[in-house]
Length: 220
Ligand code: ADP
Ligand code: MG
Image (cartoon, rainbow, N blue to C red):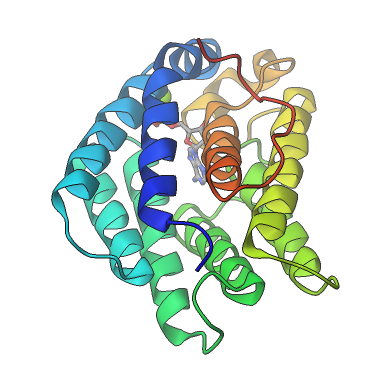
């Protein structure tokens, strides 16, 4: 294994906490402005749990993140993000390929996308995190088949596709979740959940050693 998933998840947890205010600002335009707070609180708990565990098993670490996020907050975000991590843990356990292989990385992202869709019943185009994670999973599967693919190249492809998907949510009218109540007024605003997904994949890609992409948020 060329990079450390625990370190990558710790980095991701810190990046999400740093993005708290920007994520809440996005949610203030579309919902109730709590998304950054929910994410930051969840991932502060994730950071504590990861720091405390001795486990180095990748599936166990993802499961720990999933359970911590599920238990940390309510809102739409907890169950969606939590089940995404739990399903990616399950995918790692049931994929024969070796740890941190491109195939396994793609399988984990695909499982995360499927879990979010199963839980939330949103489709691509509804202006939710699905608009980031579904193209990310497709890009990951394609990237895993490329000659010379690595888990980092798969994560990089996923993060880029997620970023493009999050960007596209600006041109969508929200059809599901709290934001759907605002209808046409959601046009022009980027979906916070899609932004969080992108930030998470981008942080994982960077920690895995992939070249850094265009930032979805400016973090200071
Ligand atoms: P709440 O809407 O309960 O305040 P958050 O603010 O934490 O929860 O999260 C809002 C985000 O959740 C949205 O930006 C959207 O991406 C995502 N979301 C909401 N409902 C769904 C759903 N049914 N499926 C997928 N994502 C959803
Ligand atoms: Mg909200």
